[in-house]
Length: 304
Image (cartoon, rainbow, N blue to C red):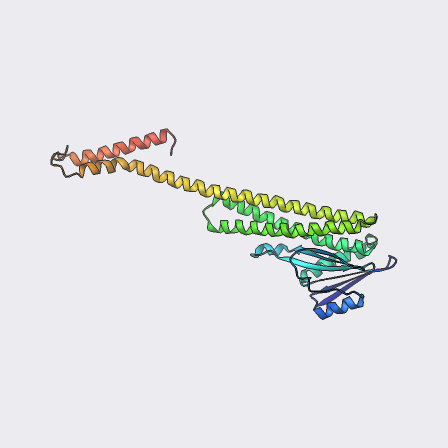
């Protein structure tokens, strides 16, 4: 557990930011009590983003998409919690990587304190920084899509390709679901901050625009995965058709031999050429000639 603090004194009244890394319930209760906030922690473990408005503060739950989650079977979405009052913001997360991101945001804001004109502005930069982490996730996802696309076109028989396609398809659907809930939160936040026209209104709609663009990107990748799945199924179907075509041609080439062998296998006394010393070789030659004629016909008609 670690507590990071920042204070922006150029604002009247000053704004305090407290971030807690992997806190226990007792530590959170202590920080909430110091801010004179009564808040139930029972609803902070949900899998969707959330916006709750209280008389003296608002609560936000947003998610950061970890790019390293692409190597896992399930999506690695890190929940981040924020409580925003008029003069302070309390944030916490159970993932230590979020603390590193918050430290970067803190250094940027301390280097340019004029960016922060209220606690709402501070919340905007923190949430927007978490959303920016989605772009590296999409970059990694794009590399995976390009790789699986090449495999689909050149090696459609690999069973692992099918598993990877469905894994990525399920992954992007989960991303779409999370971004959809964050889009709803951004919209509610825009309505809340937009109640009184101010700079908060501009920031809120900018945040909403960022979520919309990320959601559109997720839609694009979802459509790409549908296309790759169609390509994979078409490749498998084409491969099956080629196999059936090859077997059909082989059957057609050996059919004259089967017919002649069946005729000469009958139990009749007088069979043409049965007593001829060259009869066997004539029959074999006839079979070979007929097979080559069929092969020539197939090639002339470009069936093979």
